[in-house]
Image 1: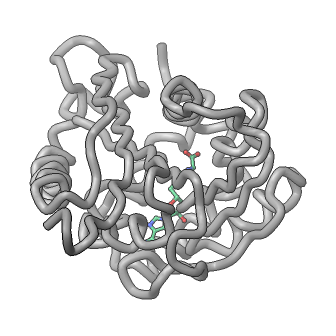
Image 2: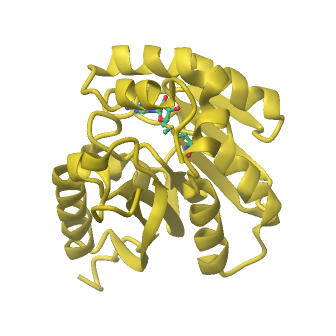
Length: 235
Ligand SMILES: C[S@@+](CC[C@H](N)C(=O)[O-])C[C@H]1O[C@@H](n2cnc3c(N)ncnc32)[C@H](O)[C@@H]1O
């Protein structure tokens, strides 16, 4: 099935390797059409991430404080709300995307923050869960931002992250997973789930298909749980 006019170009623009300030301006310009375009692309990451987090979450979600990083227009918040998570904060680098997120009324607080350049606007150990969906990718949020996500998560809290497995993101995914393993070896967090999803979203070109001829890019949901800091006696 053909993609609607302009979708391919708008997706290509944000994956075109623009420098961060330019990338965020591209998102500002895309904000008004974003939800329509990602519906066209059959983009299911917000649904898959929220369902995975809800599955892993051990206690009733209503009181859980959740930070949705790179929240975009609020698609993750919508899925989290459906599953009972309602104490949501969001951050994003694009003011255009944040305006739309604000109009949903689903976030109690929304702030602008450029991941990789500035710290998250939150105290340490503040959130029961942190989500980062659709923005861990080449040219977007660098894998070096993982420790900052961990900083604002309380010990025992959860981090729900996603990335894509299309050819132009493979190098990034390998780098991300190396950073994840490093944090696990240091005892900072433990992986709870790694879910490979073959039909993550429609590919905008044959070159970007994860499996040739499939028409789709595959992706992955990761859930990690932050470890308590060991006491000196524990070593
Ligand atoms: C593909 S959208 C995903 C939005 C939402 N999480 C979703 O799944 O619909 C990527 C979002 O990440 C934001 N973003 C990308 N890189 C960023 C960075 N380094 N710092 C802050 N926001 C960033 C963009 O502004 C955009 O809103």
